[in-house]
Image (cartoon, rainbow, N blue to C red; front, side):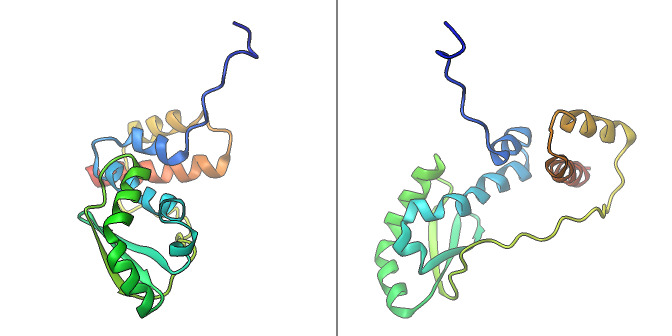
Length: 158
């Protein structure tokens, strides 16, 4: 088989990589849950996503902000369908219920700016391990972000 005949595996997303690194840990579960925001538009469709956005996820219940009372009424009847579509897009039954509330349908999540502040100091061995794990990444911004996530997870585990 030649190189041209071989099909390259699709690249992994950062979320998928982080989920595998933190599998079985609380942060791994939270990263899986964060995928709800990634798949929302595709799973529920453009029309619904323009009037309703996920705003919170807690213990299987997704809170969705809806722009108006007529849309809230319509989506009340579509909760089960939306839940099924979301879980299908996620590949597992993370969403067990949907709670609708009046609010603005913001088009994107605003992530906080990265910080370099650390509450707990990690051991030198753990810092070396993190450095070795992220060393192969070419993008400095990605290395910094992943390093910060790993430091936080390790600090919380202590």
